[in-house]
Length: 319
Image 1 (cartoon, rainbow, N blue to C red):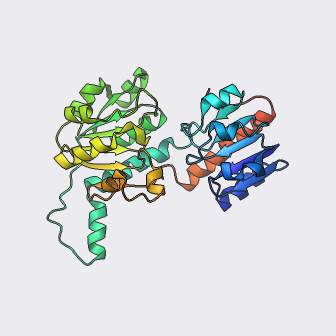
Image 2: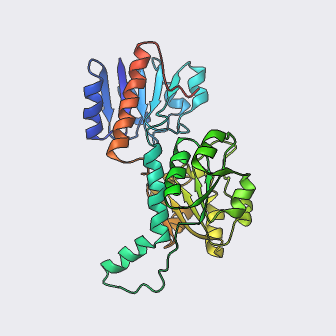
Image 3: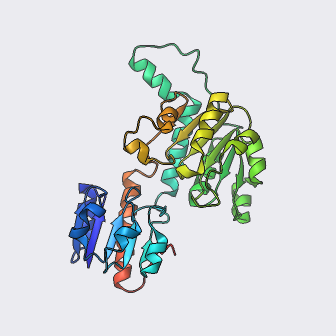
């Protein structure tokens, strides 16, 4: 089978080659699918990552394509409708990083609550003044979790270890785990009103687009902290900047941004630069998933997705 892999680092190429012996693997370290379309025109499988835009234009130029498999949980970078029209399957990696992303959530939160990043910056410049770096405890704070899937539940378990009070919102409620983990489901509006910290773990779709917007921020406590390790489009960037300006939001820990490509393109006029340059905002470049353990799980599941196709028993299909 001809498999075209994009955005794969040398280590990943070796890993995939070892597990896909006997197949024709073509590797590209960049995400330039359209620019390399002639080299992969006979591809039966397209293996991509979050920055690889799989458009209808690309799909229509790959007549033998049977499967697009993304090495991520999210798949909004793939034109699902175009795939459906061509009877092309789309698979993802549904559960590679529930603990990994949840751990990163608390790395961002702790860095904000203890002003770690500002302290490190100062001490590297031999400045040891700390009076304006007063932090806050996590114990007894109310944490609002939006989205109680695998990652959200791991975040809840970690939060319990810090002695936090936990409330949650989800359209699908797991009443059994609510009782086991000792948190409480509430309405979205109640969560906004009662949370000291809000952490997003919801998928991105038309229902969750800009769920944190001007109206949502108006319902929140003054000095709320926002953490997003889910999808950038869940937050309206301009509204978050205004909430930070007004003091409604104390600080934000963000691993994702809407329109992240603007940062990749180094567009200095983007309001994203105004956001990530603030000293009460921590931005990590979509790396919450990025540990050796999680990366290996991603690659292993991707291989399983591909080999399942050869057995005519596809798995992890998203539609």
